[in-house]
Image (spheres, rainbow, N blue to C red):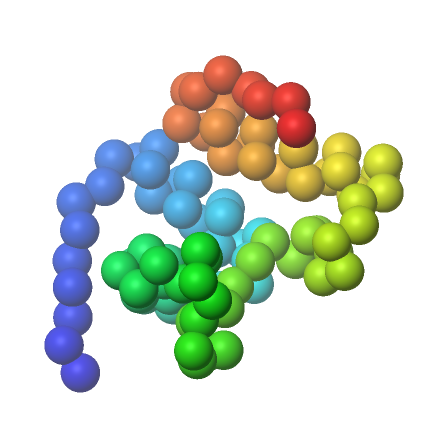
Length: 91
């Protein structure tokens, strides 16, 4: 199987690792899925293959967000933003 390498800063690696953990994916699988989804506009037009689906585990599937879930999601994203030294966001 072919291998792709990427040069990352320590902060980038930590942020990607954290997001992969939140999605229940390995870094390798998350990057593969994200790139295929981006290359095929799967986020806008839907993926033809469910093997490329991923999402943060705290995100509800039914589209409704309760206040507690909303705060967890916001904190998850802000944790990754803090790792990168970025400003926090409010959803």
